[in-house]
Length: 353
Ligand SMILES: [Ca+2]
Ligand SMILES: [Ca+2]
Image (cartoon, rainbow, N blue to C red; front, side):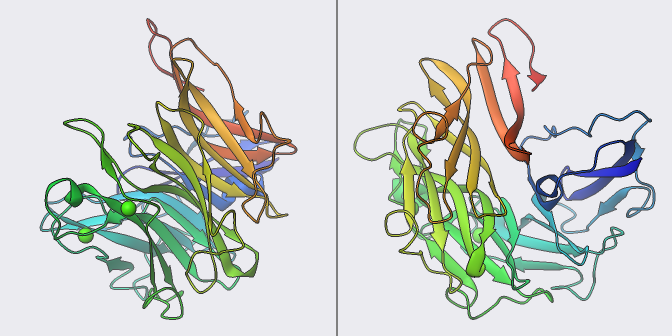
């Protein structure tokens, strides 16, 4: 019997749960886990024939906390484990109401590595200006061992009106000591503008997002997010984007660095991205199709070309319930893909799927 552990994130806290199992965790399960902003984890521990519980050898009684701020919001959004067992958790810290990207490093045993960044946490305020769009939602480790985090930032924190709501995407690359890698982007930061955002009602604005990221060969990365669909439409379209090792849009990826996938004219909501060993990219999210919110998987090559043999023209959907079903995270199991999320019938309570 092999021991299976699953780390779950909740706030600026790492938890490690373990249980006995006859099955070995797949590499994709262990490699990267992203969770949405919900306080309720959507992933659950694998089925086990023995009672699962917190791994008390991890952190302090199974929980590793990091002191970021005593009075403002901090949150981890994604976690990954490096080959040497080091754990990297990405999210944001808030300083005077201004959110900044954060990356923390823990040992395999869940002990904060105080030699990393400043006392274990690297904090970079990419878009300084007292606003709250900035948050790292994805983390990946490239073959050269560098750690990348990605998420939305304000396009221009000095803008006013609707312009103040426009967002871009930032990707930051760090070395293993928590310093920005100055060979990437501009002083370690790549700013990517998927498109101009747009106010779509008196209260809503659709701007660039990124939720998932995975490492590709050649120290490149792929991201999964959205941008405004364009014209007068009130929705966003999915965006797969590729960056070179130098931190610029990879013109060999998709069309000049991006592949846009328009599943729904109502809503396309990205959540997670994994990269298979052969470089195949699979991204998960959810879209409103024929009035029903359905899980969505998109498959593309390492060059960002949609795999039209997958699902319908590269997009797989499923009508789970007549109401809402959302896919937050995806993992590969053999030749199949497992998506986890939430489903809700119009008159029934929510449940995990
Ligand atoms: Ca900021
Ligand atoms: Ca933008």
